[in-house]
Image (cartoon, rainbow, N blue to C red):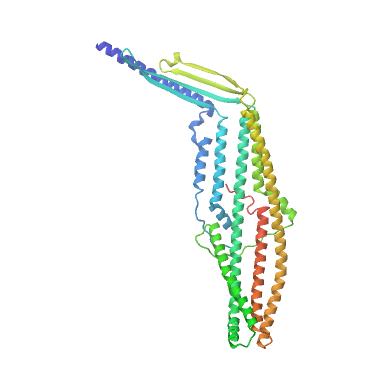
Length: 469
């Protein structure tokens, strides 16, 4: 019995050695195939592995996208562009577009993987019992596949994804410019709403002493009651307008805080208007520089290339296939291997590929119409802004002359009042009229400034050449 036990133990040791040798051989074969794919076993060099670097950079990039409250020193013409850039980078809408771009970059990795070698490792193990003896069974396989020629189907698919990445990059720039324009608009609106409110306050302050004197005259019964009522009406209307201006100033203040991601409004200085040239120049610049149009063109090109990839898939493709199968029990003797070329041609897929090609053609036509529609809308928007800009220039010129006349009338009435040749009601009316004209001038200057920035936004852009991603 002891001899039989010794023989069984020796047999188990022999089997154990076979299993160990099997795994050694199997692992070596696996690394040989992997080495064919990674060129001199680059798989061990993580510092140079592209996929590894991409994943690390991607994580680091997304960690930089966390929203934070930007720090501003002041708001003036000198640092306007820097402050607006900070507002853009802090805006969640901008981060959403950058995240979409990163997603596009991840998508292309999936397509590029189709062109690389594919290696599968499988192992199957278990136990069997016969003649009151348990036996361990184990088998493994390594399969290798690589596309050699597919009429450029995968290459075209990769090019299409690259165009989609370009489109996403232009969309990031489009969003950055849009947020930048909104920041300038809110800055300008807050600036002018405060100036308008100051004019109302100044006008009411100048009118208050006159109203008090008119009330005294009214009580004495000397003056014409109709003129007094008219004067009181003009003064009351000015008070109501000032209250409305306060509401508009508070609204502009809230919008400014929101767009710049502030906790409270700081000192806001003036900003310089943009230099505007002729309409034809800005139209050409818009067609040439508009990131929105560039995004649409890149997306259309991606659709055209995707269609070419689908057409290539209708042709046969050739792949290299290899495989190794070996059991644990004497793998050298009982193992098998195969290597060869696989020709694959889809003769009939029920019209699935043709339907995909037709769908791609429809998408291309739609993208063409979408581009033409966007171009038409941009031209209209630019034309309206340019006409509003020219109209504001003319209005400002006329209002400056009108305010000069209004000031002269107010000053003359003030001089005549001292010698009894003018009435308080007339002087009050002149003060109210001057304040209204000054507000009209401020609104004209605001329109001039807003439309100059809008023309730049549509044509040249606020941040040409800036790296947003």
